[in-house]
Length: 70
Image (cartoon, rainbow, N blue to C red; front, side, top):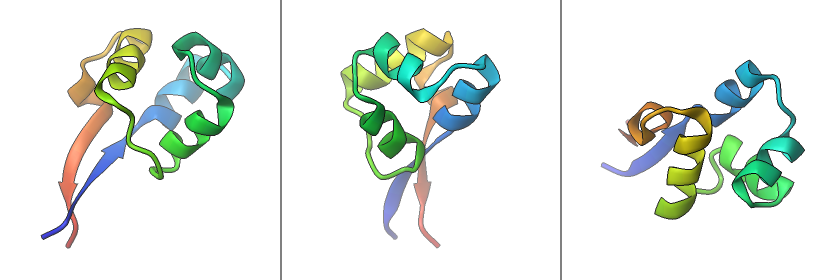
């Protein structure tokens, strides 16, 4: 079975009412990186994952989850 990482960054960001640009600036990345994370095309490093977790005031496990392909 192949594994992948699923995240809810898009939903969390929208619930906060902030733009991709604002979020990117807050966590120190480009808007393109935020887009890639939200689309599931990029898995953030541990450091970036922790920054995202801190920004949303949530545990990493509440934002990112390891899933198995069916």
